[in-house]
Image 1: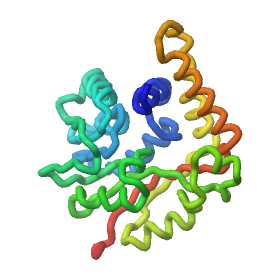
Image 2: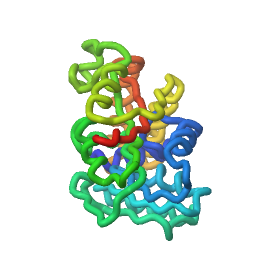
Image 3: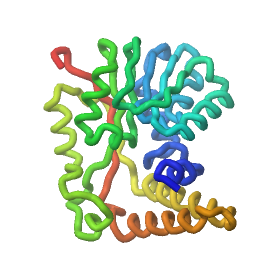
Length: 249
């Protein structure tokens, strides 16, 4: 059972692959999609949830999603069809860093998918290459709520993996980006995300006791929950930011 298979099952109860509640997602999309006729791109779209929700109620929108995970792309296409928006979205099974398009996009989304590019700034650089003039980026990534202790580092994090929120925003602004809106995930959003992640994976393991990966799935769930509760809960934050470039950016 690889990382992508585990993630697909674990996000079954929380299809937004980040600690964001539905109301927060709705507000962020409303801020970023004011006209309703934009062309949007999601780099690391997973199951396509951001795009499907953006397209719903905005009949003038067109969208493309990119993800290397074939099973996630299959779920994204199924979700788009079920929502009645499949004619306005195209999903590409390709590495987000290698994706090219003849189009420029009014909004590029990359929330919880910075790992596809390495770090936050490299993700912003990649997003900028796809932007139309005046376009914006909706990006979500972690930051340190407080300096990480040894318990957090023992979960596999590096001390310099993130900055605090203020430094993160300062670094973004120094690269020529203007912050138009931001959302910091609450503890309730984090807890709902983590309980859902581990719970969905545990439920799958219990419901498929004869599956050869059942034991591995249950262990992955327990390990993840333990790392969260004993390691990074209250230390790792998550911010989703809506940005545009300055004229000379």
